[in-house]
Length: 251
Image (cartoon, rainbow, N blue to C red; front, side, top):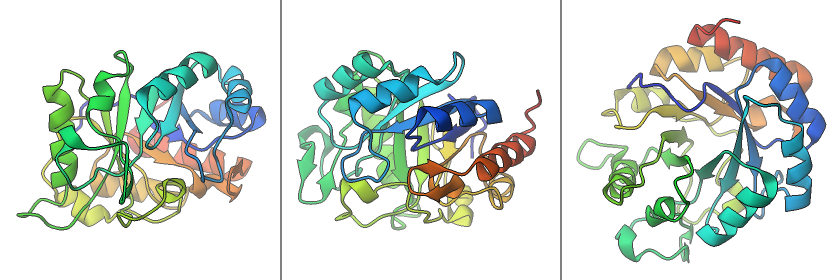
């Protein structure tokens, strides 16, 4: 996979309290994800998210995670909470993107046009390995990312997460603990965008995942929790230390 410079190196997602935000920042993560996906056990109301964001120090990226929310509503949350970047986590979909609604029978969808509607905010796009389509398990991801580039609003990072069924509800699109097929991912033709790896990573596996795939950025939520939405201090510290060491980051 490509080694282009990513937006972050180590992201801890699904942080739900100011205390956990401070913990994650002290551990050395350079990005924190705040979840706004209804149905997720880590979903935050705007008021609670504002308190979490206030505990994140300067220099640590505040990423809002959304699935299927209209761009105007995303922008309202960005302004009210103080977010630095957007992560779109809805289904890629199986139909022409230019005609895709934000919701359809397959669940939440975030079309490429959403990027153009977000005022130039950095957009991270969650993608998944699909069926082998003409030898390309990242075909759907590649099409979505190309469509966003054609609109003049490219995603700044592709986040490869574990595969889910097309009928999966918004609240179960991420943070499930399911793992990406590292071998298939590493064998896939590289995407043009920088890439981060998520999906089932924990302190015990993150270094191996980095070595197996060559990624320069990783993301976890459930892998450092004692319960959904509650971070475990020991696992957070161990995950960040293992990831930073495998990535060759010092200081």
